[in-house]
Image 1 (cartoon, one colour):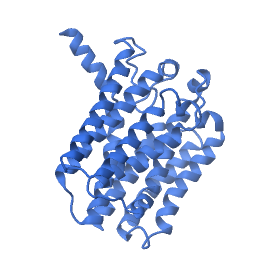
Image 2: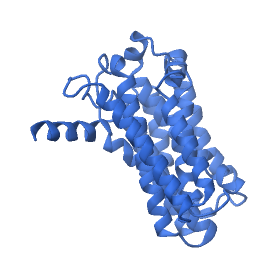
Image 3: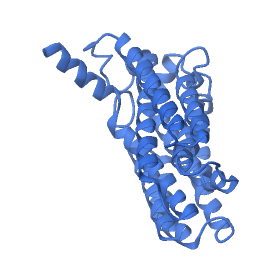
Image 4: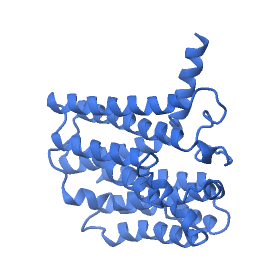
Length: 294
């Protein structure tokens, strides 16, 4: 009984529940877009898509825990960086993380297949799910291990900025309109800004372990990239107000501008990963409210 309890706690910690919240916010944003696009949301399909999302995120987190033992053992953990610390403390065997990743992968695939064959989900959902699972796996796992080749930040930003909200939209419609992809661009940008902050905090440990992330490759130039990405998030929304974004979305996004400016200002001096996560969450939440009000 004690072993079962400790294993359960380890699995919960390695799933990184706090970080899963960001995925939930991104999915909620996609549902708000669907509400705007179609005027209603199928709750059954939305819920099944949500469960699939959680399974996919857990797969990626477990795989990351398994693959990053070397780096996580060198870095100072925070609530958003450095892994869960479970495998480093040797509370459970490392294989548990890999097994949990495989089970989560299988769960997402089975639920997707059941949803499509039963008519609850549209076939396009399968394309989004498979793309997301593939992207989540190759982020840290062999043979590609994108995070160690300088492509992990881009991969992760695509997952959080495009595929997560589009999964919500795909659960509601048989075809994802091109404009919905364009709606996701600022989400992608703010997720990228957050990831730059997270990997900046881990840069020294990543460099020591030979993990050549984009931030490790760029070094101090990461500060400039972060500033450009933050600025582009707002410029994109404001530039396409009316043509692409309803006024309500632009106004809601503008409300977060002071936080975005402060986040960029702080990053240029002493980057704090939690501030980037707060900024990302604020922008996505504001945009969700804007789409619901439009």
